[in-house]
Amino acid sequence: MLRAVQLIRRVRDDKAGILRPASSAFLNAFSSASGSQRLAGKVAVITGGASGIGRATAAEFVRNGARVVLADVQDDLGRSLAADLGGGDTASYTRCDVTDESQVAAAVDLAVALHGRLDVMFNNAGIGGDVRRPASLASMDMANFDRVVAVNTRGVVAGVKHAARVMVPAGRGGSIICTASTAGVVGGVAKAPYSVSKAAVIGLVRAAAGELARSGVRVNAISPHYIPTPLVMGSMAEWYPGMSVDERRRVVETDMNEMVGLALEAEDVARAALYLASDEAKYVNGHNLVVDGGYTVNKALNVPAPGR
Image 1 (cartoon, rainbow, N blue to C red):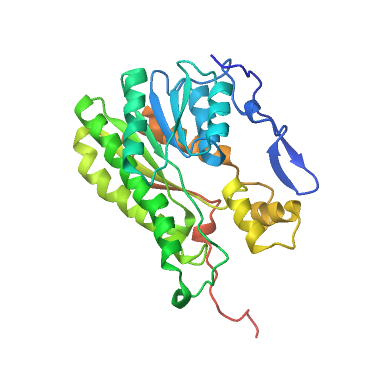
Image 2 (cartoon, helix red, strand yellow):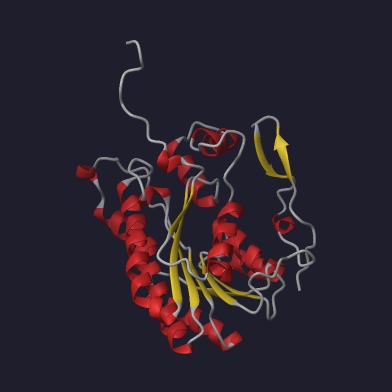
């Protein structure tokens, strides 16, 4: 089914002091020969599926037996990834701007038309907004706020709505997963528009989970911390224009994270999504799965050191 058969290996990067994949080649992250098939027979739509977390999740889902529809606005990346994942009945790409509800509905309908069902909806598309704006709330650009919320919140609402539209009548249950963020859990992680948009996603998940539980459709969130995805690294370039790419990556992988010697990667979030999509999580509903190495539970008190 897949053209890549090499499993990912992990080695220590002596310079950075962290664990990372032995090869940066994306297709080494999955293998048809050794996949556990935890999603065998399932069909998934992944918004923002062409890069970053969506890309890693698409590979993980396919490796575990799912058929995927990649929905994104990055046409070249999306088509290329679909081909790399096997194309045909295994992976397809459709253009989808999640700020347009009709395009979200069309992506869901495409999955049903191609495969006869929808089992997993991963609402993952997101933007960071204009991080160059002043951080002060008094200086907030409301147009920027509206753009961020349109993608990160309203786009997710549309995904939940249209997934439920086809999952509930089908009577087979289903898993709806929404990408939130540690920025929606604690303050100070990102600027207000992004934080608000992600906190709203967590609230949406709780509301939708309660409504859809009786139908067997589960709704959960994943809140990752900083990962050097294209989205994050683009923001880092604006925050720290004087730094090299390697220096920015070090800040994301070490300075912004809690677990010494380990780097948070898109594949870690993909495995969290795999769990929530699988039948192993059949009774997990309305949950926000935080993938942050303990960042959000490690707020220090602002008190003087002992003896001072």
